[in-house]
Image (cartoon, rainbow, N blue to C red; front, top):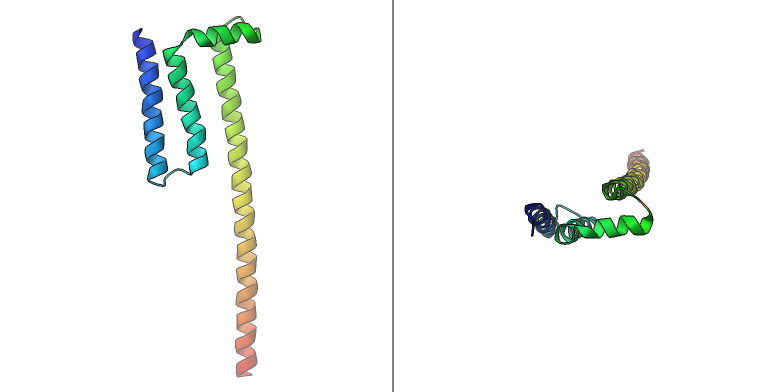
Length: 118
C-alpha cells in the first residue's frame, strides 16, 4: 500500500471512530451520525481501492477522475446543507408555535386570576 492509501484509509477509520464517539456521547443525532459514517466509510474504501474512482469516472464518462470526486463531494455538501435548512426551518416553526401557545396560556391564566379577584 502506498503512503497516500494508508493515510486516506486511516483518516476514514479515524473519522468514523470520532463520529461514533460523538453519537455515543449524544453530541450528534443518530441519523446525522449515520450519514457521516457513510462518508467516512467511502473515504476508507477509496483509500483502500484508489482505482475505484478511476473506474467510476470511466463508467460515468468523465475523463478526469478527480473531477468526479469533487462533483460528488459538492453534491453531497449541497444536499446536506439543504437538509439542514429544512430541519432548521421546521424547528423554528415549532418554536414559534410553542411561543404562541405559551402566550395564549399565560393570557388565559391572567384572565382567570382577574375573574377570581374581580
